[in-house]
Amino acid sequence: MNAIDELANVEAIVASARDAQKDYEINGSQERYDTAAQAAAWAIMEPTRNKELAELAVKTTGLGNVADKIIKNHRKTLGLMRDISSAKTFGVISDDEASGITEIARPIGVIGAVVPSTNPAATPANNIINALKCGNAIVLSPSPKGVVCCERLLEHIHAEFDKIGENKKLVQMIPAPGSKEKTQRLLEITDLVVVTGSQNNVKRAYTCGTPAVAVGAGNVTVIIDETADLTAAAQKISASKTFDNATSCSSENAIVVVDEIFDAFMAELQAAGGSLVKDEQSIISKLWPDGHLNKDVIAQDAEKMISALDLKEEVDEATKFIVVETRGIGPGHPLSGEKLSRVLTLYRAQNFDEAVQITAKIQAHQGAGHSVGLHSNLDERAHALARKIPTCRIIVNQAHCFATGGAFNNGMPFSLSMGCGSWGGNSIDDNLHWKHFLQSTKIVRVIPDNEPEVSDIFDQYWQRAGK
Image (cartoon, rainbow, N blue to C red; front, side, top):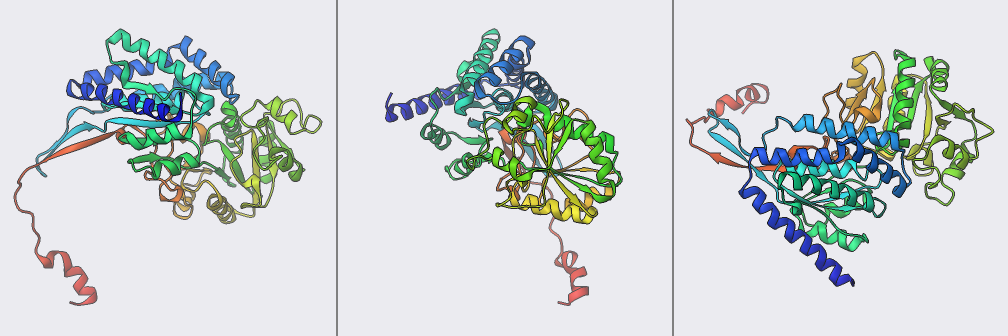
C-alpha cells in the first residue's frame, strides 16, 4: 500500500468510527455507555487475558516485567471503573434552579489516541473505557512496539462487544505498520486528540489543529527529611522504583536526602535493595553509551541492568536497583534527568530548605509540572513545596508510582497519564480522566435580576484608594 492509500485508509477508519459514534449517541443511554465501558474493562481484567496481554507486552516491547504488568492492568482498570461507576455521562447531568441552568452531557465524537510502548495494554484500555463511558468512539495509534499488544486488546474488546451486541467500529486502531504520517492524519481528522508518550508526539498533538489533551514528561524527585519514617520511606521508594522495571513516568528518578539522617537513611535504602555505586562517570558512560539511553538498561530486570552496567563485581546479589550520588543538575548532567531504569540519582542537602532548592533546579531542568514526592511528618513542608516547586502534585509519604496515578488509599483519579499544567506545556493540570472525554450543552433560563450597585463592588476599594 503506498503512502496515499495508507492515509486514505486512516480516513476510512475514522469515517467508520464517526458513523458508529453517531448511532452510539443517537441511540445512547447511560446503561449502554456503562455496559460498553464494562465490556472493555473486562476484556483486559479477565485473568487469563490479563496474563496474556502482560506477557505479550513484555515480549514485544522488551520493557517491564510480566508480574507487575498483570498488577497494573488489573488495578488501574479496577480503579478507573470505581471512579466512573456513578458518573453521569448521558442526559441531564445537572439542573440548578438558582442559576436557571440545566446541563446536558454530550459526547465529543471520535477520539484519536496516541499510546506509548511502556504500557501497551493498560494505557489504551484506560482511554477506551473513558471514551466509551462518555459516548465517544476511539481510534488508537500505538507505538510500533505496542502494535501487537494493542491488536490483541482490541480483539478481546470486540469479543466482549459481540456478547452485548455493541458496534465494534466504536473501538479501532491504525493498522501496522505505524508511521508518523498516519498518526499525523489521525490527529488532524478526529474530534479530540489524547496523547501519552514522547514529547515529540505531545508537540505534534498541540499543533495539529484538533483540540488536544496531552501530558508532560516525568522526572520525579523525592525529598526525605529528618522527620521521616526512614524504614517506611526506603521500602516505599524501593517498591516504586522497581515496579515494572521503572517504566512509569511516576517512578522516582532522584532522591534528595538531608544531612541529619543521610547515613541512617542510606542504610535503610540498602536494606531495601538499593546499592550505592561510587563511580558516577562510569555509570553515565554505560547508561548513555552513544548519547542515548542504553536499551539493555531501560526497563530491564535488575540482573540484566547490573550486567549491562558492568556492576556484577561491585554490588551484591540482593540488589534491586542502584543509587548514584551526584551534585550536577542540567543538560550537562544526564543523571539529573529521567532514566526509565532501575537507576536512582542521589543528592545530599544540608537541610530541608536546600533540598527544596535542589528539587526546584531538577524540575526546572526536566519534569516540571509532573510531580514530586516528600517523606516527612511535617505537613507544612508539603505546603512549602506546593508554593515553591513548579509541580501539579506533591505525593506525601507514599510509593510514588503507585500514588500519582490514583490509588485505593488516596483521592487521585486512576489514570496512566498525568497532566503537567503550563509548567509542562500541557492544557490540563490533573490526571487524565473521564471528564476530559465529555462536553456539555447548557440550557439557560431567565432568573430574577442579580445586578449589584456599583458601591457594593467598590466601597472597600474606594476606602483604600479613593475614587
